Length: 186
Image 1 (tube, one colour):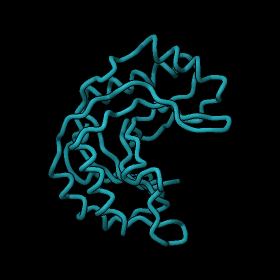
Image 2 (cartoon, one colour):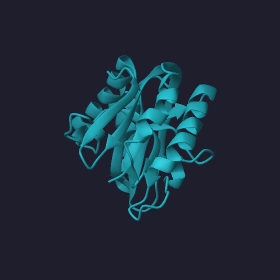
Image 3 (spheres, one colour):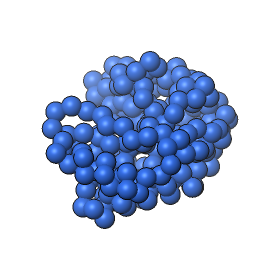
């Protein structure tokens, strides 16, 4: 499982996403609410790697000092190829978000390694390749995508809904723990 550094959302936005998860669950569709962990919460992954050392936390404190800052939750996006897809809410990139992301990549690269211990941020997290989003459902079979979109459309949160990034966390799947680096987690 991948280690990551993530942006966390304000309480209202967090609940808005959780309602979308619940709508999918109520319809019997894949959803992020099915992850039964106390640390499962809506988030925007800034970087991910096979391993991210805890030494990154002090380095990220300078980015955390920028919090809170506003963003917008945009429309629904579909990622992936093959037989399964990821369904997510786009996060409309702002200058502040892109700047914070770039700083996290710059500061965090030396702490991110692959299973072979070489420096290895996942490519989709690098500036110019990163698409900020909040995942609603993973592993959605291609045939189920229209139904997922129908359910999300029926209970649609407004596109371009205002949101605030309030915290930065490091997720460690090896210990199933989150480490709040800065800001206020809901």
